[in-house]
Amino acid sequence: MWSIHNHLLLLIAVTCCALFQPLHAAWISGEEAIMGTKVSVQLWHQDKSQGEAAVQAVMEEFRRLDKKLSPYIEHSELALVNRMAASEPVVISEEFYRLLETSHVYSELTKGAFDITFASIGHRYDYRKGVKPSDSTIDTALPLIDYRNIRLAAANRTVSFEKPGVRIDLGGIAKGYAVDRGIELLQQRGIGHALISAGGDSRLLGDHRGRPWHIGIQAPRDKERMAAMLPLVDNAISTSGDYERFFERDGVRYHHIISPKTGRSAGTLQSVTIIGPNATRTDALSTSVFVLGAEKGMALVNRLEDIDAVIIDEDGEMITSDGFTDAGSQ
Ligand code: ADP
Ligand code: MG
Image (cartoon, rainbow, N blue to C red):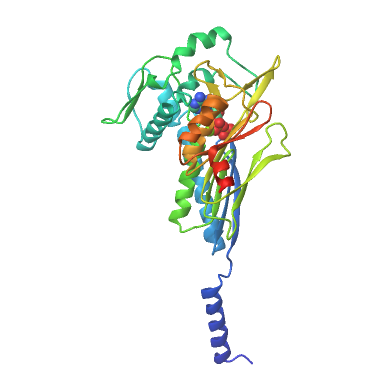
């Protein structure tokens, strides 16, 4: 028969369990299509419902940023800027202003390989429908691609464009930024082990409970195969490839990474993977190194102390940055 004594013993046993071994600690995950890509979150939490709420908070943050930054949403802040900024200075949100400043930093760092005004021509491609601008359209519009066509005024927090026809797009940095924002939200909730990825941009919080996370680099010409697996802890990793959004015409591959110098699909590489401290940085640099090509791109990576890279060149050969050789020879 149950007595108060038994109840007390049971209570003590349950309390001990709760103190020393969380009852429902588990990996919790979620996946949604946002920002034109697959967003996935995986995290370790002591409490299932709080863990699920954290996954939802990350998804909500991605949706918020998509509404603000998408070129396809008519009332996004980005669309508004593209409509207005050639006629008058447009007052923008602090967050948008900071993103434009960050983009400017990467344009300078990469000597113009990273350039959000690529969209002045880039927006005339439709990769799904196989639509591309004519050579003469590209040549006429080419002077519009130049990050120096963007004027920022910190005092009023405004942006304006120097020339009519200039367009911007944050597709080369927005997903990385959203991943970083998501990781920040998880940290604020005390979460220590997590992975957030948005298409080719991922960031890891902590390790995979006692062992590293393993992130694969896809073989660019074989969707079923990984070209490499990298063990990572507390890092961000981004891959830019010529195989994500493209069409082929007369043997030419038209893909979504645009060389600001030519207004056409950049270079000859198959993919560039960048490993670094945060996903905004790895996202911007993976697009940039893709544009720069193997030689100039790797030279830049090897100058940056916090960055490593794996390039897969036009022959499918893998080229790694100095950080890999240094690590191997220690
Ligand atoms: P993904 O979008 O597949 O993750 P990337 O990170 O390489 O791939 O970003 C490619 C996107 O970056 C393009 O879809 C486009 O929005 C944008 N972009 C293309 N060329 C440039 C460039 N030269 N500078 C900055 N952004 C670019
Ligand atoms: Mg990128």
